[in-house]
Amino acid sequence: MRRKMIAGNWKMYKTVTEALALVQGLKTKLIDIDDVDMVVAPPFTSLAMVYQAIQSSNIMLSAQDLYYEKEGAYTGEISGGMLKDIGCQFVIVGHSERRSLFGETDEIVNKKIHAALNAGLSAIFCLGESLEEREAGMTFDVVNRQVRAGLAGCGEKEMKNIVMAYEPIWAIGTGKTATPAQANEAHAYIRHLLSGIISGQGAEQALILYGGSVKPSNAAELMNQPDIDGALVGGASLTVESFSEIILSSRG
Ligand code: 13P
Image 1 (cartoon, helix red, strand yellow):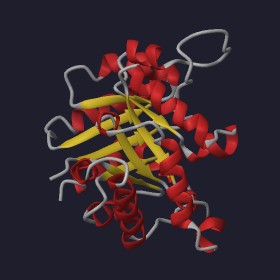
Image 2 (spheres, protein in one colour):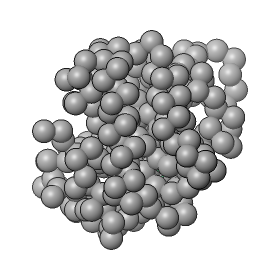
Image 3 (cartoon, helix red, strand yellow):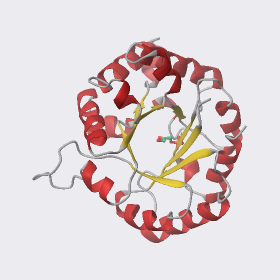
């Protein structure tokens, strides 16, 4: 039985003061939850303070991105080692906003996944098709390419520290959620692809999160699907009420 994981991707929202207020509220509300893995991914500027605030709670810390070099003259970039140093356990890699707005290719995503693992972080590896690709019947081709390219050089050992996140681009921030059946179909396909890369048992244990307009009203139905192991939540992770409601409804 796979444990559910609910991760909140705060994107470019929240000052330090706002971030601390949100995480304090979550901490209080979710104090008794020990059967769901809960992760928050604030912007870089709030990571260190949020890390202090989540001590003695079940909430874990993720960054939203990293650069793949260890250090050097890369103005504006942040390394995996720096994130590990301030208390991150996870880092999101390959988010569609990074791919579409900042030109990240599958090859860059792959380098970032290896850099995260080398720094001792777990990677939350995002992938998913655009609306045009879905309408052209290319969903599985795109997912296949992204999984294979993103996970190049990853085997059984690496996969233990990689969480997959299927986020169809057409469902992100649009209010349009994939139906539970559509999402589960893609997740089952991703699990099938994983079983070609690692053992069947490893693929069975892999966590595959769904992301794209997850909210309190649709979370339970999505989380009840056999191949959906949790959610990567954007907009609805920005308030204590909606994020905790999603967490509570993932408990079944
Ligand atoms: P929304 O939940 O706002 O659609 O965002 C999803 C997402 O991109 C999470 O990484």
